[in-house]
Amino acid sequence: MSADEPLTLNVPEPAVRPGGAPDFSNVKIPKAGAVPRPEVDVDPQSIRDLAFSIIRVLNRSGEAVGPWAGLLSDEELIEGMRHMMTLRTFDARMLIAQRQGKTSFYMQHLGEEAISCAFRKALSPGDMNFPTYRQAGLLIADGYSMVDMMCQVYSNSRDPLKGRQLPVMYCSKEHGFFTISGNLATQYVQAVGWAMASAIRNDTRIAAAWIGDGSTAESDFHAALVFASTYKAPVVLNIVNNQWAISTFQGIARGGAGTFAARGLGFGIPSLRVDGNDYLAVYAVAKWAIERARRNLGPTLVEYVTYRVGAHSTSDDPSAYRPKTESDAWPLGDPIIRLKNHLIMRGVWSEERHKQAEAEILDTVIAAQKEAESYGTLHAGAKPSARDMFDGVYAEMPPHLRRQRQQAGV
Ligand SMILES: Cc1ncc(C[n+]2csc(CCOP(=O)(O)OP(=O)(O)O)c2C)c(N)n1
Ligand SMILES: [Mg+2]
Image (tube, rainbow, N blue to C red; front, top):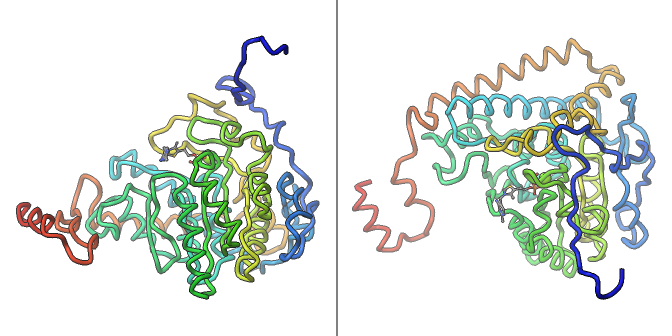
């Protein structure tokens, strides 16, 4: 092009639109077991290619192969299976509850269950997650009460957050789950700051930052990486690339670097991509990154390659922007089915056992739901008191709020 021709912008477009045939030929999938496992104190410069590959453990036949395999026992894998199934069942029940008007809003994890469930098992008590709304598996896999979660979703009289947060924006200090902020990417700076504070206090606890592909376009993401990189903060920087940011495909936020993981390279941060639908691979990579943080080797950036099978939220209709069958074509499969096949191959699971587990889990979730609903739902039963909104905000309530509380008569 000559210098006096008009300038144009590059506006990336998704490969297909509604009505078209799904096409994931742009997602290059290496063979399971093909990516090497470096020592945790490796020179980041020598593993730059890990930001462009995908670490995978489970192969197409359900075998666990390669250098990242072999970390989990049969019992641990069965427990992981139950966590993912519980999260999926919890989601299904809450989605129906939203359609029934028992809550205003819900967000599912469908297809992404392995990420938060496996990551939680690699952490130690006292470590702190700074999650987004799509990591409830961190709570489920840590044994947090489903009744409390549902009470939060229903904003009822037992809502631990007293109706102050959007449904699904849970919080539990005991379970290492920092209050979710609806302002995307703020989690990243908070996590890095918390990790730096842990190091300043010579503590041993580490932090985990969470962000979606789309939200990495926010300035906070980049600011957090500068601090994490300079001060070698004990933090794991997680990016969940589920291909979509509501209706915007991942090619917009990704920029020209090729992958989201590659963003870390410019900061000298070891950056890995992992198959987010492979429970074993997620666990192995999380363990590696967490060990680096714990051994004071600094931050690690991890991109989980996955697919958001459900709608963005109950306010979204994906058929408006992507082919209806796109999730069936996703080349990394379904995390529950893949772990199921692996467990069957190991001889510790069966189709019957799976069905039985499904029924048991459904019973447990329904029982939790009945209990939660006995404390109220959005439009029925008990609600948090208006008095609650004045509590827990200031150590000492300022006079103007005291006056307002008196005026409200609560
Ligand atoms: C700062 C900010 N901008 C915009 C929004 C509105 N918003 C909520 S979720 C979302 C998409 C986020 O996509 P991604 O980061 O990929 O996460 P995913 O939902 O796919 O897990 C947007 C734009 C917001 N909550 N905060
Ligand atoms: Mg996304």
